[in-house]
Length: 294
Image (cartoon, rainbow, N blue to C red; front, top):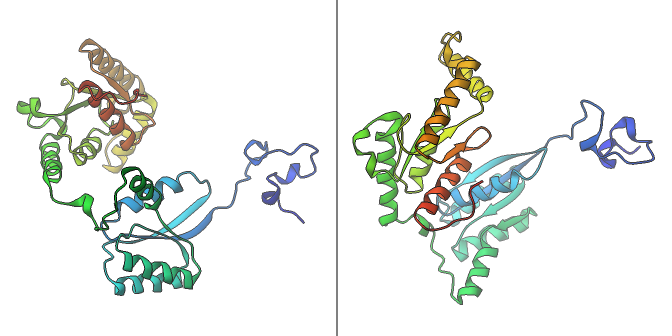
C-alpha cells in the first residue's frame, strides 16, 4: 500500500482523480513527519561562519530538525580523530571550513571511510574569487578574527552600546552612529548589541532623535504579558492594555513623524533583519547607496 506521504495526498484524497497537494489538503491534522539527523560543523576558528551557513540552509527546509555538533578551533590531527569518532557513533553530514590542507585531507579521508557526506562550505566562493582576482588563496585559519583596528572598533562600539542602554549616558549621544528610539519591548537592546558587534556605536533611548521602532499593538501586548509573567507581576496594568498600547504606538508615530525620523516596524522582524534595515538607512545617509529599504 502506498502511504499518503509518498503520494503527497492526505488519506481522504488518495482516490481523487485530481491530486491534491498536501499543503492544500482540506483535511485537518495531517502533517509531514519531522526528520531528525546529526549535523557536524567543523571549523579551525570560532565556527561562526560554518554555523551561519548551516542555519541559513536549514531554514529552507520544513519538517527537518538537525542536532548540531559544533567542533571549533580544530587545528590538529588528534582533534580530527576525536570528532571522527563521534561521527562514527552519530553519523551525519559534515560541513567544514578548514583551510589547512593536511587537516582538511585528514578529515575528508575519514569521512569517506565512514561514508558520510562532507562539504567545504567556502570552496565555491573561494574558487570563484581566486579565478576572478587571479590570486592564490592563503590558507590561514581565523584571518577574519585578527585583532586589527576593526576589531578594536567593534570592542569600543560594544562598550558604547552597553553604557548607552535604555537611556543611559545621554550627554554624549552625538558620538553615536545610530540612536534607536521605540516603545517598550521593541528589541532595542539586543538590536543595539547586534549593531555594536558590526562596529556601529549604538544607543537606545525613549523619544530621543534617532531611528524609531514600532510594533503591532496586539503583538506588543502579547510580548509584554509574557514579560510580566516571567517577572511574576500583576497583568492588570496599562502596560498591557490594548487601547493604551495602541495610543502609545500612535503617539510614538506622531513624534517620529514630527522630527522626520525613519521608522521600522519590527513586528515580524528578527533582530538581524531589523539591524540590516538600520544599516541600510545609515549607509544611505552616508552616501553609500545600498539597495532600497524594505
